[in-house]
Every structure is written in C-alpha cells, then in structure tokens.
Amino acid sequence: MADHSAGTAATLIGPGQYVLTVEFKINLLRPARGERLNCRVQVLKPGKSLIVVESEVYTQKLVSKATVTVAVLEKP
Image 1 (spheres, one colour):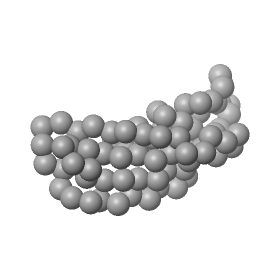
Image 2 (cartoon, helix red, strand yellow):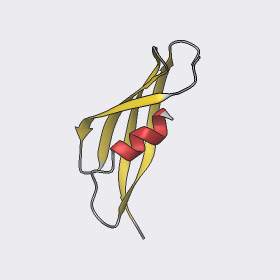
Image 3 (cartoon, rainbow, N blue to C red):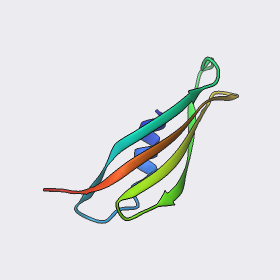
Image 4 (cartoon, one colour):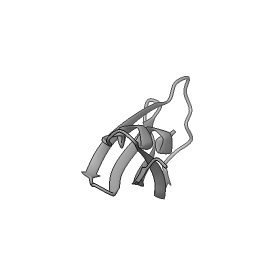
C-alpha cells in the first residue's frame, strides 16, 4: 500500500511518462489491527528524473512509514 500510494503521488509527470520504483525503505512499526487502512503521502523532492515520496500507513495508529524513490521514464 505504501509503494502503490507513493507511485500515485509521484504522478507529477508529463504525458508519455510513467514512474517505476527504484528504492524502497519501510519501517514496520506495529501490527496493522483494525477495519480500515489509510495511507498519507507527501512528495519530498519532485525531480525531473527521480521523485522522492514519504508514505505513512495508519489504522488508528501509525503502523508503517516508508521512503520511496521512483524514476521518471518515457513510454516507448
């Protein structure tokens, strides 16, 4: 969920481009107990070729925090 949300947040790209995860670091803080998972994302560094995004997954409490770097690629 953290990676998927980060990729969606990184869609600050132009037509004919897509993103691909190149690095992913996650801290699993506690079991995700609850009926619903929510994810908050923030673009930390929007770049031309790399975008860095932070993702936080919650139930009622923070359960994981990830830093994701995605590459911006051109569609063939």
